[in-house]
Length: 216
Image (cartoon, rainbow, N blue to C red; front, top):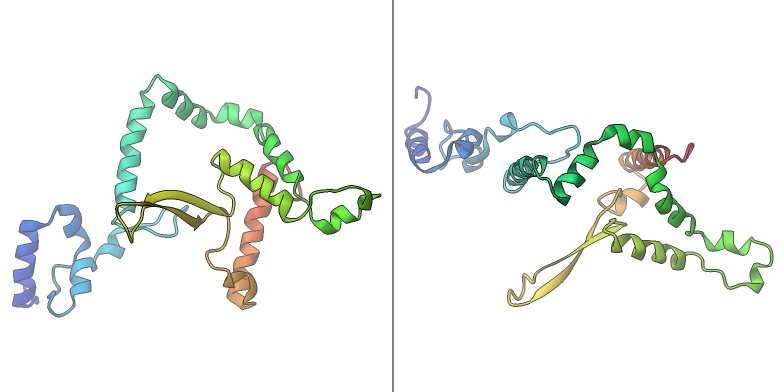
């Protein structure tokens, strides 16, 4: 096309023969790959990609595949008459969910009440005569109980092929839950960090309010 270099035109013809349309839409075929390969390969990606309100990133390598898989799975469970279909429809039954309110969460909130600081425990009458659990000991109990029913608390885990020895498996631990992505946000004290911590507290407060803990 007019304005495009001979290299760009040649590369565009090659790409059209070898790449699927979904890939071509993310490329900028007006760019000569020998001059700016990144723009050639990904130049239109930001223009054609929109983040949903609940997303903070989108990667074509896995987000697109995941979205497509979820769509296929949705079509399957919508018509399933077994346990999977029943579970799926129960999750979408907003009438029943709203009628129940926070009641199904009560057992988990009771578990949270088992967590208490040592200062609080020592302040109880005659605390020196009893061996109360407190601090990390009570928190660890709750983490173990929740992890066993697949509720991610502070971390998630998985068993994957060991990248250093493909003949073996490795246990992977990763951050999870409603937390900030880097420890520095909690202690750096910068304006940006304070804003992020304030936002996290706002989200946590809203979660507790939705769980029936007014003023949480």
